[in-house]
Image (cartoon, rainbow, N blue to C red):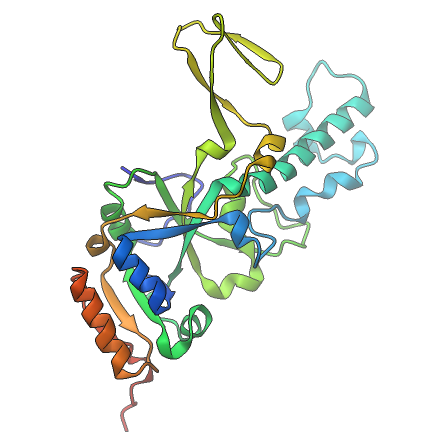
Length: 303
């Protein structure tokens, strides 16, 4: 099933938890016309938040290590080899591993494409302001169960999970970098008001490529491997340098069943009646069956 569960992705509290996407009228029209969601490159998203997809300060402490004794015991136990005796060589190898993880995080941003939602049981006054002009904004409501149905026939595998927030400058803030998805699912505390749930598409053609065998052998980057199965094609990982040299793909429009995706549509509580009428008309025109209503956020209190 194209909407996949992955252990690194933290699911919503339940499959029916409310997920909101706030947008302007042009993006809403694009959703209807293309019957797809746009997944933007994480490399492009980093233009507004340079920490997107990167590692926190705790993953840079190796630059302070002066000797092997400075290396925390749990790291030494994990990476040191019993047959290594030269302490300087040990230290340098551990530093090299840490530097490679940093470079990989930056390079891999080119392979991730995201679509962001707000996880909340209630609509958010702040989100109306942030993601569009408040008097012209539109919000669609969905859920994980709807994602499963909406992407059932998609050609790409989609994963989704809650963002974890932390203080990146604090060396005590740990992030498990053993899985390449982890940096994609973390953000700084300054963005915690977003309560973000993130859909992610991983374009593996950025991080790997197909090579063909020649005279019964696969050859790439100094490696030589026999084509034992005589299949002629093998997938191999791209080097960080090769990934960094690739042009950045701005994003992908990924097809979805919009009637399965959208539970309800709301227009801004400050919107004029014309916007409500326009959204109702275009929704009907493009066959979207979800109800369209004006947000009750600015309704008058009882007195």
